[in-house]
Length: 355
Image 1 (cartoon, helix red, strand yellow):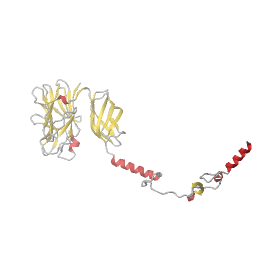
Image 2 (cartoon, rainbow, N blue to C red; image 1 turned 90 degrees about the vertical axis):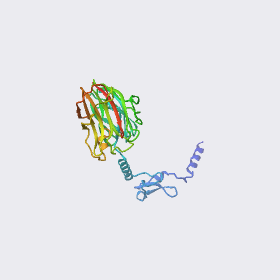
Image 3 (cartoon, rainbow, N blue to C red; image 1 turned 135 degrees about the horizontal axis):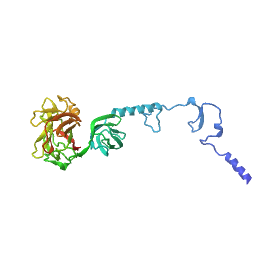
Image 4 (tube, rainbow, N blue to C red; image 1 turned 180 degrees about the vertical axis):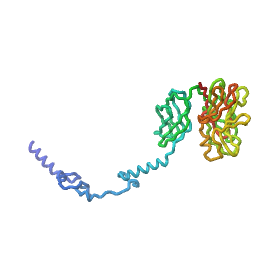
């Protein structure tokens, strides 16, 4: 048995070594700056590092697989991506908050609609605590918010990498809040669209459409009526006309005008939001009267909050929470809101019975 084992060992030493295998003796060298490489015959051999040829290529323009970016090329690629993102990144836009009025010291969910939202978008509401966000799409974010104890209107800041603040977009009020639903409108003149809660939108451009909200505003209590004017996508509101919309407080008993009414007035030379009394002898401007600059509608009209406040038997007009007028007219009975619109939509319509 011992002889057989010796014979087998000898035979193993004579095995064919014509393979790409490294012999131990091949690694026994004391020469510096050498590395193993495969030659054209598929054999491993030592070569000097100074003789190594590097495959030179620009990986940013290369289509062959297996090529890697070096540090310089990686930096170039990063700069290209950053520049692309920066040039294509747009500031966020706030269309509406649903709802945008809450009671103090409550926790609620709100829907933020707008444009250019991302999963990393951050929302902050002045004076309120944001608990968590939920990204739905580039046009919608859901936010859980706990309101503070201070009443008022507050700024909303949206940051998608570019930060933009929307003034007075969120309200905290102590009182009962009512929003008109489709079934709450009376005497709807088609094609006025009142399907969306708290909104009235024109269906035809430059055609008078009207409706009455069948909600009685209690003149024995303090209350607020508010809405926002929104540019309709159906046309350009800067065409000349006597008026573009108006919103009246009318008496429940006879439908007649009660006090002043809100008008979007346009006399062919100047335009602006105003409060006008029944006989047109008194007109109070809510925003600067402008002679048709191109950005007037977005700057002075779009998404600004118009508000009637009736407090202790005195009727006030507010524009973005700023007092604009105090009227001497006294309400003698409950009133409703009547709207007439031709070229604008009304959104964010609310009635709040305050304490």
